[in-house]
Amino acid sequence: MIAYAGLFASALVAATLLPMQSEAVLVALIVQGDHPVALLLIVATVGNVLGSVINWALGRFLLRFKHKRWFPASDTQLAHAQGWYQRYGRWSLLGSWLPVIGDPITVVAGIMREPLLSFVFLVTLAKGVRYLFLAQLTLAWI
Image 1: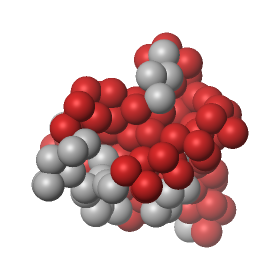
Image 2: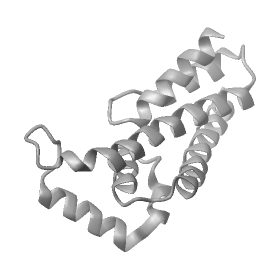
Image 3: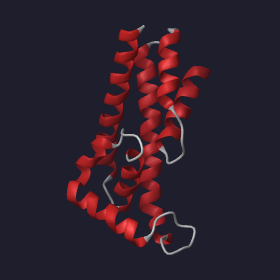
Image 4: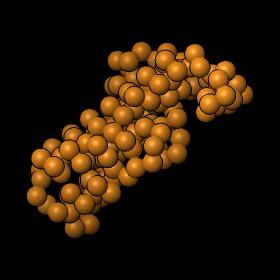
Protein backbone atom coordinates (compact mmCIF):
# COMPACT_ATOMS: atom_id res chain seq x y z
CA MET A 1 0.00 0.00 0.00
CA ILE A 2 2.92 2.35 0.68
CA ALA A 3 4.14 1.90 -2.90
CA TYR A 4 0.75 2.95 -4.28
CA ALA A 5 0.55 5.94 -1.94
CA GLY A 6 4.05 7.03 -2.92
CA LEU A 7 3.25 6.68 -6.62
CA PHE A 8 -0.01 8.58 -6.22
CA ALA A 9 1.69 11.40 -4.28
CA SER A 10 4.57 11.69 -6.75
CA ALA A 11 2.16 11.73 -9.70
CA LEU A 12 -0.05 14.35 -8.05
CA VAL A 13 2.85 16.65 -7.19
CA ALA A 14 4.46 16.11 -10.62
CA ALA A 15 1.31 17.42 -12.31
CA THR A 16 1.34 20.65 -10.34
CA LEU A 17 3.86 23.39 -10.99
CA LEU A 18 6.19 21.83 -8.39
CA PRO A 19 9.09 19.69 -9.68
CA MET A 20 8.72 15.92 -9.24
CA GLN A 21 9.43 12.82 -11.30
CA SER A 22 6.52 10.40 -11.15
CA GLU A 23 7.87 8.53 -14.17
CA ALA A 24 10.92 7.39 -12.21
CA VAL A 25 8.71 6.11 -9.39
CA LEU A 26 6.47 4.24 -11.85
CA VAL A 27 9.41 2.65 -13.66
CA ALA A 28 11.02 1.60 -10.37
CA LEU A 29 7.80 -0.08 -9.24
CA ILE A 30 7.36 -1.85 -12.57
CA VAL A 31 10.95 -3.09 -12.50
CA GLN A 32 10.48 -4.27 -8.92
CA GLY A 33 7.71 -6.52 -10.21
CA ASP A 34 5.72 -6.75 -6.97
CA HIS A 35 2.63 -4.87 -8.17
CA PRO A 36 0.22 -5.35 -11.07
CA VAL A 37 1.20 -2.96 -13.85
CA ALA A 38 -2.43 -2.11 -14.63
CA LEU A 39 -3.03 -0.98 -11.05
CA LEU A 40 0.17 1.08 -11.08
CA LEU A 41 -1.00 2.78 -14.29
CA ILE A 42 -4.38 3.59 -12.77
CA VAL A 43 -2.87 5.01 -9.58
CA ALA A 44 -0.32 7.11 -11.49
CA THR A 45 -2.91 8.42 -13.93
CA VAL A 46 -5.46 9.30 -11.26
CA GLY A 47 -2.83 11.09 -9.17
CA ASN A 48 -1.50 12.99 -12.17
CA VAL A 49 -4.95 14.02 -13.35
CA LEU A 50 -5.87 15.19 -9.85
CA GLY A 51 -2.72 17.32 -9.80
CA SER A 52 -3.77 18.82 -13.13
CA VAL A 53 -7.21 19.57 -11.70
CA ILE A 54 -5.43 21.51 -8.94
CA ASN A 55 -3.69 23.53 -11.66
CA TRP A 56 -7.01 24.09 -13.43
CA ALA A 57 -8.55 25.33 -10.17
CA LEU A 58 -5.60 27.64 -9.55
CA GLY A 59 -6.03 29.13 -13.01
CA ARG A 60 -9.75 29.47 -12.56
CA PHE A 61 -9.78 31.05 -9.12
CA LEU A 62 -6.46 32.83 -8.65
CA LEU A 63 -6.69 35.05 -11.73
CA ARG A 64 -8.44 37.67 -9.60
CA PHE A 65 -5.06 38.30 -7.96
CA LYS A 66 -3.22 39.02 -11.22
CA HIS A 67 -2.44 42.61 -10.21
CA LYS A 68 -0.72 41.60 -6.97
CA ARG A 69 3.07 41.81 -6.89
CA TRP A 70 3.45 38.15 -5.91
CA PHE A 71 1.41 36.89 -8.89
CA PRO A 72 3.78 34.72 -10.99
CA ALA A 73 2.81 36.00 -14.46
CA SER A 74 2.75 39.44 -16.00
CA ASP A 75 -0.21 40.81 -17.98
CA THR A 76 1.79 40.25 -21.17
CA GLN A 77 2.51 36.62 -20.29
CA LEU A 78 -1.15 36.05 -19.44
CA ALA A 79 -2.32 37.61 -22.70
CA HIS A 80 0.14 35.47 -24.66
CA ALA A 81 -1.00 32.28 -22.91
CA GLN A 82 -4.67 33.15 -23.37
CA GLY A 83 -4.13 33.91 -27.06
CA TRP A 84 -2.34 30.60 -27.50
CA TYR A 85 -5.18 28.71 -25.80
CA GLN A 86 -7.79 30.54 -27.88
CA ARG A 87 -5.91 29.54 -31.01
CA TYR A 88 -5.53 25.83 -30.19
CA GLY A 89 -8.42 25.41 -27.77
CA ARG A 90 -9.14 22.45 -25.56
CA TRP A 91 -7.19 20.12 -27.86
CA SER A 92 -4.00 21.66 -26.51
CA LEU A 93 -4.76 19.68 -23.34
CA LEU A 94 -3.56 16.60 -25.21
CA GLY A 95 -0.12 18.13 -24.68
CA SER A 96 -0.57 18.25 -20.91
CA TRP A 97 1.82 15.30 -20.56
CA LEU A 98 4.71 17.26 -22.07
CA PRO A 99 7.58 18.36 -19.83
CA VAL A 100 7.85 22.08 -19.06
CA ILE A 101 4.77 23.26 -21.00
CA GLY A 102 2.23 20.63 -19.95
CA ASP A 103 1.54 21.94 -16.46
CA PRO A 104 1.11 25.57 -17.54
CA ILE A 105 -1.36 24.43 -20.22
CA THR A 106 -3.57 23.05 -17.45
CA VAL A 107 -3.40 26.34 -15.54
CA VAL A 108 -4.31 28.32 -18.66
CA ALA A 109 -7.25 25.96 -19.26
CA GLY A 110 -8.57 27.05 -15.87
CA ILE A 111 -8.02 30.71 -16.68
CA MET A 112 -9.91 30.22 -19.94
CA ARG A 113 -12.79 28.56 -18.06
CA GLU A 114 -12.48 25.21 -19.81
CA PRO A 115 -15.35 23.04 -18.53
CA LEU A 116 -14.11 20.54 -15.96
CA LEU A 117 -15.61 17.51 -17.70
CA SER A 118 -13.84 18.09 -21.03
CA PHE A 119 -10.69 19.07 -19.15
CA VAL A 120 -10.62 15.83 -17.15
CA PHE A 121 -11.40 13.71 -20.20
CA LEU A 122 -8.59 15.15 -22.37
CA VAL A 123 -6.01 15.30 -19.58
CA THR A 124 -6.80 11.72 -18.53
CA LEU A 125 -6.38 10.57 -22.11
CA ALA A 126 -3.05 12.38 -22.52
CA LYS A 127 -1.53 11.38 -19.21
CA GLY A 128 -2.87 7.82 -19.31
CA VAL A 129 -1.38 7.21 -22.75
CA ARG A 130 1.95 8.65 -21.59
CA TYR A 131 2.10 6.29 -18.60
CA LEU A 132 0.99 3.35 -20.75
CA PHE A 133 3.75 4.07 -23.27
CA LEU A 134 6.30 4.36 -20.46
CA ALA A 135 5.13 1.05 -18.96
CA GLN A 136 5.38 -0.67 -22.33
CA LEU A 137 8.92 0.63 -22.83
CA THR A 138 9.89 -0.50 -19.36
CA LEU A 139 8.41 -3.97 -19.78
CA ALA A 140 10.15 -4.36 -23.15
CA TRP A 141 13.43 -3.34 -21.56
CA ILE A 142 13.33 -5.70 -18.55
